[in-house]
Amino acid sequence: MPISSPLKVRSLLSAYAAKRLTPTEVVASALARIAEIDRPEVWILRVPAADLEARAHALEALYEAQGSAVFERMPLFGVPFAVKDNIDVAGLPTTAACEPFSYTPDTSAFAVQRLIDAGAILIGKTNLDQFATGLVGTRSPYGAVRNTEFPERVSGGSSSGSAVAVAAGCVAFSLGTDTAGSGRVPAGFNGLVGLKPSLGLVSKRGVVPACRSLDTISVFAHDVNDAWCVFNEIACFDPLDGYSRKVPGLGLLRGAPRIGVPDHLEFYGDAAANQAFSAALDTLSTHLHLAPTPIDFQPLKQVSALLYDGPWVAERRAALGSFFETRHEAVHPVVATVIGKADRYSAADAFNGQYALADLKRHAEQLFETIDILIVPTTPTHPLITDVQANPVELNSQLGYYTNFVNLLDLCALAVPCQRRHDGLPAGVTLIAPLGADRRLAELGARIQGLFATEAADVAGTVTEKKPAAAANTIAPLPFQEPTVALAVVGAHLRGQPLNWQLQEASARFVTATQTATGYTLYALANTQPPKPGLVRVTDQQGAPIAVEVWDMPLRSFGKFVADVPAPLGIGSVQLANGLTVKGFICEPSAVSNGSGALDITSFGGWLAYLDSLNVN
Image (cartoon, rainbow, N blue to C red; front, side, top):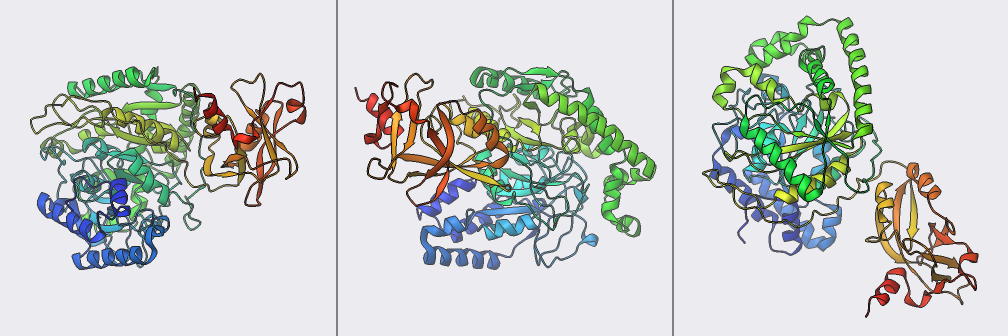
């Protein structure tokens, strides 16, 4: 069957499950698209076609043998992707856009191997600003990577090829890296989602470092849910990476988040960028009822200055070791100028920089006590390639105005496409929040993207009429990497019920809908708001199975959750139909005794069935 462009993760998985597509057809489509767009500067290395076909046939054989079960084992079955060429793939050279630096690793980067194990198909390795030093995509001996739709404009960097490979429909997603904005700026310039995780959530083992203490692998995709599907596979603790960590995930917020915006917005005279950001904020205010609060942006600018005008530039020099000196002629001239600034700084400067950053981090902590999420323009302007080549350092620095401080402050971020500029160029916003708030950003980002999902521009730059988009899908929590407790809920905490938000706030994850063992009765309690049932343990002869949902909750959240449960309810032990005993809601017998006003609703088999009976008429 014909494959529509662009390729998308969940669309491909649905087509595979319905047997409308095969991996062989998708590989052929990806290769045809690469040939069609004829953009050799996007790629540094491509996997040979014969190897891709062999991989596709192997996946098809697994599908034939295992049926639909293959999708549980391989959640990214048959999805084509690309990786930035500072990320290792076993048997393929890693160049970091510097051929004399290249080496061929025996093992793939931890994240890449997880994607391959999840069934994804690697198409190739993409171009970048050399040694991941730049935000423009022009600093590579393999050529300047042009913007997907506007080839006279920069694509953004340093993950330039990774962004264009997705935006041009060659792959469904790609991996980049992000130190100062390299996973966000190219997303903004190419109409993509750029997911920059909390540091440590994704292993950087097998990545050529720019600033190892600040780097992270990032994800490019067409929509937030696709990016989250990929992130779900690579967000895994790696004990062999000294910077990997088990980051406790923050739960979703109840109601609208408190939003901050910079008190002074800088667009370097780009009126179209200014107008697009204002229009996006107006849309969010109207449709999502978000009310932005101006915040003092000056301390965040001070953090940004530390990255390239402070001792952290020496970390880039350290990453290259002796290569910078022994093969200096192989380093791109602009990259050499940037990294060469390391000679200005001493060990004392490095410590003084850490002290300054510690004070500025305290400001950021106080800032995020007053807001939940900071919204900024992804980029302040979108320069021409010729202008960047004429003024490479200053224009590059402008692009980091809203990005450079994020990793230094240990924040997470998500770039989301929004309303285009009136000249037709892509534009978007970036959501920024504290460590562990990745899911909060994805949930809001999916809602924001939904508002602009039907917006498009023709070749003349005319924006078509926007239409309401479907509500964003729920963003599930990442797989737990911490102790959890199984909790059975029976009433107002069920999915769709008024107190389910308490589970979401506690970072709980839905596991299954099931029943209790037979020895339970269920009552509709009197005088409770919102209405609640009471589950009471009786003998097997007196009771019946009652419908419940089992949720997995982080142990760190369980104590507060229990403390908030009001009498006559409590948390005890509940036996499930499969014989397992889990924690769950129970009720004091006095609340269901004669004269209590409680109504025995055991015969309905569950709270939702009882509520449905009330709405029959």
